[in-house]
Image (tube, rainbow over all chains, first blue to last red; front, side):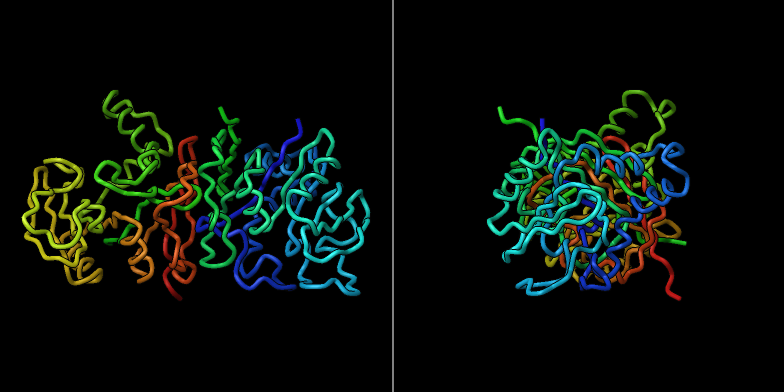
Length: 216
Length: 216
């Protein structure tokens, strides 16, 4: 059955991005380092070829993030630094001509824009009628596969608050960013009934995996 | 050399105690479960004898918490539920006649009270002149051994803010408490220059160990 999955990396002190996000620092000051656990595994794969991957919790989680994903949802700030009306922007995302999604991506925004088809199967759709509408379209697009909630913090929190996340994977990097955008702020996740099904770590990250238990 | 060590357990969403702390729920609703990783190791030790401890990250950290500690500092709320003037209270802490500290314990409070000597080497001293004064007295009492900052959240944050913590161990339980007392709130730990020297986990907790780097 198709699931809604949220995969997000945060610092030990709770930040999913550092302060002062900008074109130069998409993840804020120091925020890029949050994802070193995943970069390291990708670099390893590119250097050594897929057959020679060394098994480990980081590699396993880096692979799982993209596995069986049929559609992605992300917030506008994760898509780019442009704010307000799109106007004549030629911004097509942070990821170049062939983004790593390879699925339809639904971008939450208050400002309409025509869909943007890039290479490799990634098409960005701009959704202006809210998180439920975006999830409906993403679920349709995903078919039997899962819907991945990308980020950033605000998008993740909106779906958590609405109780729409089935599986939650939080990757905790051993960083102390001190300030930035928090995940677990103004969101009470206790009522959702998430149960931890797995906790594993490498020196680069601890991976907490939760499944929302069906209500009795 | 004697060090100032802070050892604290928090939920993945950042709480070191649940909501509504009380005489019945010293750690707030759901807060007791934070410490299951440590309880499990103690129970195991009591049941099997010290020689038969199964090595593992939880056991190792449970042992390290008390190792080489010569004095402890805690906040008044960690000592007990009595607020305001002590009056004629006969409250002697949560831990019975023989508390697990076996060292002098300096309790931060705004209200003077005579020292309280219990069994097993634990004496509670009530310090009314602030965190630096408490640390000075604790350092004197500890001699060559370390000073352990107990908790709760407020006490931990005061010492973190003041840059007085040399070694920081954060144990993250895979719980989502949703509300309660937060550790990393209104405290920017980035400037302190903590470096992660170790990250290990069991299914019950991820243990993040930091050392404050000497300034250049």
